[in-house]
Length: 296
Image (tube, rainbow, N blue to C red; front, side):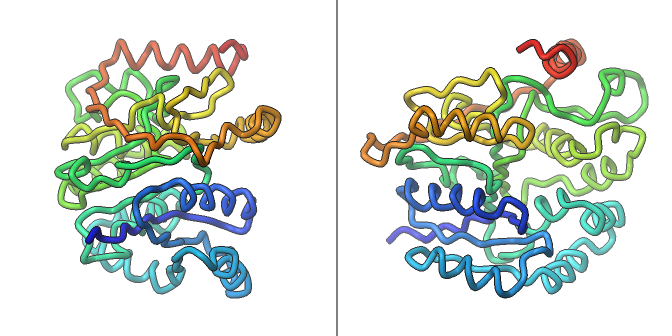
């Protein structure tokens, strides 16, 4: 008998209906038996929790107590002041740390952003053997959305060494593979934190370079940048906040691409590769061209 898989996610009151639609698609299309474990940003009240539980009356869900879980996580991070501070001060700290400590008996943590919309039946996404001794992320083929500058990768001082572009809209970790000393150092290296919202993805790109890290095949879960293309074997799309409104309208016009009667798509994985200063610099130039000149 297969074990039910706990899939964790983070929601808040803002855009809640959209997030629930995405979680609906996860339940609808996952061939594995799952339970969704909700973390919140503190804006979900008991009344909203009851409504959400009612919404998922046919599927198993549970909630973490926001204040109690914060206490558990901070206690678990004892002796790591930079990690503790990041957890207290940042929504991205909740996203990374809380799933790791919510189910202490589980060796593998499965976390999905609530803005991933699944399009067709899939299997193998929550394969523990693929996460063993490492981690799994979404592949970012467009940019390296990291907080450092290219020159931070050179010199004799201690510096980060990162994998090529990953997106942390999907975070699967073998908890034993996390290099906590590296994470504590990086979160304390404020000179490297040039873009606040990308600090934790950059930290995880460094952690990924220290273990057996992988990404989902980039055609199967796609970051929806303006120039993205959905393929026949795309099982899910990551609706990035900056481009979400346009893509929701586009998907609605095109019939949403969702197909419950489609064949079951087997998830494929690819090994992460170490990034270098030349590759990272080229990605920075590409991001500048995309965002400053609107050339995609």
